[in-house]
Image (cartoon, rainbow, N blue to C red; front, side):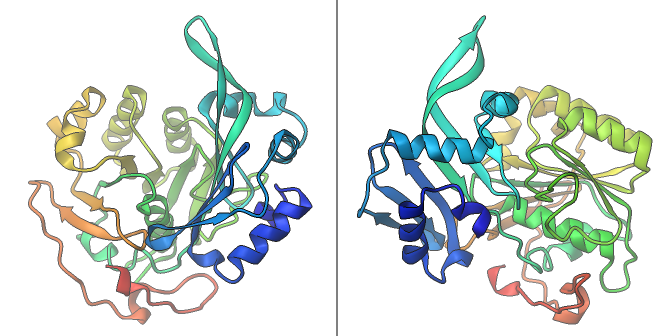
Length: 326
């Protein structure tokens, strides 16, 4: 967790390290707010506070300098989006005073609120899901869930398994469009997370453009995309599907009914694009499946018995079984 601890001044760093101790694997967020105690959020929605010190303006400036590597200009695009992705795929949400230009957000100025979201690679997280999305071939799949329900964790492990192979299913060429650098956690173009043997990653690229670039240049069997939602995203998805490429993607949402009310997604539901829709819900541990729907939107979810030897292996040749979460 050195990539996280380096963000903070020494005194705060030591307090965080002492408070968390050996619990990094269940830490979800560090909330750093000017003139308020530091908030730690763990699995099971457990909240703890560091009250021995309260960050001041100097501490806030220190954190911002570490995130930006002393160059806010370098972060211009990220500041417009309201987040920055760190080495390892960790994501820092930012808030403060917004500067606008012609009614659009130009940047966030006087940043005084930071939300450090901890990226977690959980090998085996998608083991129970693979039998649902593969029926002689992979099916177009949408993973739905509110924030912090494990969508990225699931799609990352799906990528690993599809690109490496599982049971008697051979590995496929997988193209990952990782606009927010959260799936692969890439550093200088090299993924820090295990995405399998036959995966190729387009890092920090807008989704719509990235999908078309990867189809033209990398001839993928499967496209993996995180957090779709805009009209441009949907049009690019449709183009990919018409080109014969399977698409697996995530989206923020509570339910299928909610998604159908979004104008930008209307075309996807009108054409029954997705053979599987996986809905995650708020649970003590991220990655908890509420339901899995087929193309007719019938709930087909039930617990699938999968042994570690069948799907829970990685390129490190360590076997895993992580089925207790499903």
